[in-house]
Image (cartoon, rainbow, N blue to C red; front, top):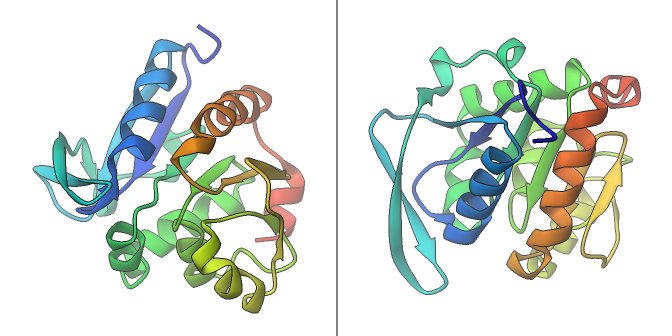
Length: 187
């Protein structure tokens, strides 16, 4: 129960990689956190499970009704469809930026660093991502590393679902630590 009393937002829409939302959601709840699924639309959003549509999850709050001040951290699951759709949603990008401005932990896995690029918060940061978007990450000014998890002042990134154990462990650690002033400086 390392995260008792902590609130964590998971920002996603249709097409999120199933394991990259469900596994952190489950483990963060097991650690005592209140975890909310935030999405542009109310209702349910559908996962992508490797090569086909998968399970759905119920949205707790829309982006426009969610407030960064209510949360201790933000998780951005990947998949190709999910971040590609969210990166053109200005409300989603503003929500992401607000966590950086307040110095709170943000965790992005797989293709989710696309969201960090579009939010303008990745330049000069040490990160990793799914290998196919490495060039995008580097072109956005980040320092890319081929490691299962990279942490830079409260920004946690991982490459793919195989990295989930290390990714989730670092989310727990960083949320327990709280705000990271260097995160806000780099926003």
